[in-house]
Image 1 (spheres, rainbow, N blue to C red):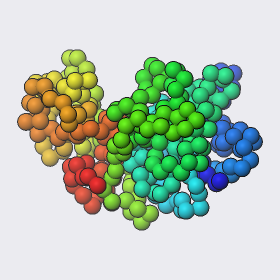
Image 2 (tube, rainbow, N blue to C red):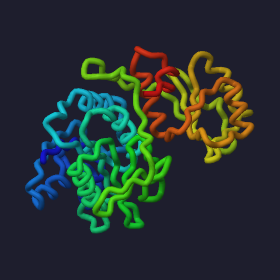
Image 3 (spheres, one colour):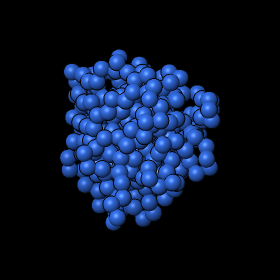
Length: 316
């Protein structure tokens, strides 16, 4: 079995030098090297398009990664493992999931809660699970991740939510599957897909032109600048709400710049505040994780073939 490993850095590609944790200079993929030493039947081809701590991810980094994902010949491999940092795992996984949904081989994004030399690390377990999913030929783009409850959850890459103070990760619609020696699905697939505007000849050029707003009490929208902004994504409180009175003047000032609302679910009634924002011209995005909505919006702003709203609302 032959697996392409795309290593990007992160904690899984880092070590402790006595004072701080940082990526291993020169790159490589230690977790793949450890696995190959124990299971020589699996061959890894490793590339390092990025070697950064995930919190330093830039628009240029995403552009580089997109080119790799869209121009690689996957026919030579049984599957792909992409190692990544956990700090922005939900965002990067969504980006990868959107671009790799239809490449024809299983893709797994693997991160770790702690450096591999820490006995509490789940990195090797997550990597081993990724290899097993590829062995079974399970098509799709997934994030295998063992939470602190000891369960190995399989998340769809476009559905995973960002972790906060916890080391655990969850899905916007719940875990897609669990792995306990066999792959057991928990719910039907809801993978998000892009309109067919990108390929090896039409690559996205990612720019910092999306304003992301999270709600908080006493929010003052006059503090937000829209200079150079092509679109705005406004996430919502857990009840899919925002302070529409505070947002009214801001929404009106946007003119032709679209403002999208994420965290809405199609099977739930909306509150009056949300209805008011929609009446003001905010555009609802239903049943998509906010992190995925943000990455999809960056990609929408990185192409000229479709209007941004049409791109975001396209179904296929």
